Length: 594
Image (cartoon, rainbow, N blue to C red; front, side, top):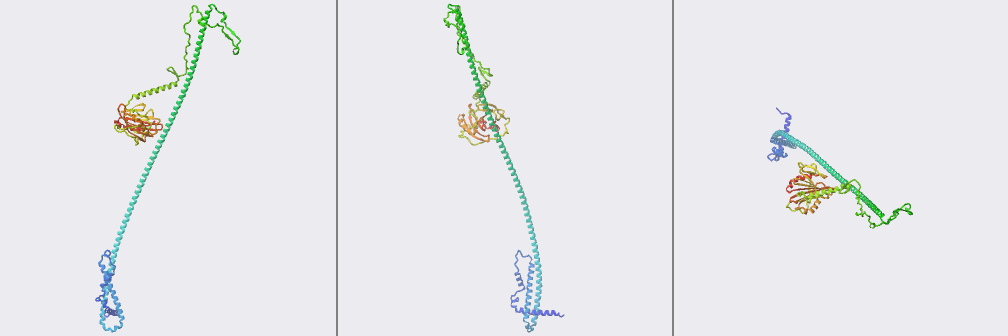
């Protein structure tokens, strides 16, 4: 079977090409043959592999078969390209040496060999191309698989990253939510704390306002009480002054009335005396006239009797002046003779009684209302004043007697009414303090609700103050004040209406003046007491009574206002001092000024 013309023509063309290739191969054998050290397909494959970018251990896919297929494909492509290049060179060589073809007809065998070789090379190239294509397809498949694996890995990594991001976002959101919750709780706690603090501040402000109002009310009440006390005192003083003025006026009036009465009585007595004297003179004159008449009668019986008209009465006229219209009577009596000149009358003797003396007349007083005391007439007012004076004297005598003969075991002979404060002393055997203490003592609150000891009552004294009192306490008024005594304990309450302004300074001055006169005096302290009335001080000391009993004393002097002060003087034995303090504190707390 003959070959088709196109096939023959192709074969001729292929023969020419092969010849050209052969010539080119011969011409370039020195540089392109393997023996000459030219590049082989394996060398091209190696060069192609070397030209690829280096893949690190971390990035290189774990597919060694794919890499090998890719390398083979590259090598086949290189062989195919080499064959195409060689054919192009052979074609160019054939074209260049066309004229020489005829001359070389004799070398047909050489051409056939060249054609066969070219055909073999062409087959080898085709085979290499097929292998390269297969290798290329395998490489593409491997690359596709690698890309898929990489895509899967990338997707997994992206999913992991997305999950991590989502977890992170969720954690961030949870943290944010927790922070928001914590912030809300913190804000709420802060708001509640602020509200509590504000409520506490409001409560404190309200309590302070209430306390300030109570203090202001108390100050106002104290001022009102002080003003009332001052007004009452002023009114009492005015009433006393008015009463004293009225009593003085009444006394002056009574004295004037008495003087007038005495004067009238004296005048009446003088008039009575004058009348009595006149009556006595008249009676004496009558007696004399009677005696003279008797003598005259006796004379008529004797010789030498005068004529009858010797005893006649004659009228004397011619009187001038104021007495011209009056009638004067002139006695016609004979000259008077002495009684010794009258001869005795027979049978009648001379009188031997003394001359008559007028009786003294006691002047009579007016019958004004009153009473007579020891022969002296007094008005009721005078009697009342006199009775009051007598009563005062009696009371003073009684007080002096009680003072002189009363119980001396408890009463301090040097106790004094407060001019400002109270006193104190030191234990026996200790050295007396050289100077007054200045550290103030805090007084307990003087609330009206202060608890009293069992059985005690709040006693209202007749002098006006109120004080806790034991049911066993006796009360007695002495020159030192009001004494309360029970269970071998003594409390003396002294008071004054003209206090010194500073209780502490007053006690210091009194201690200087009186310490030397107190038996076995040993001072404990003189301290200011804060928070007790207007101002106060304690004087504490030891001393021995006149009967030899040791005593421990504390005297609290306190000023209530400018017109009232008290001294609470507490006397107990040194052994009873500690046990008595509870009662003393109750007395301090419960005492109320009048």
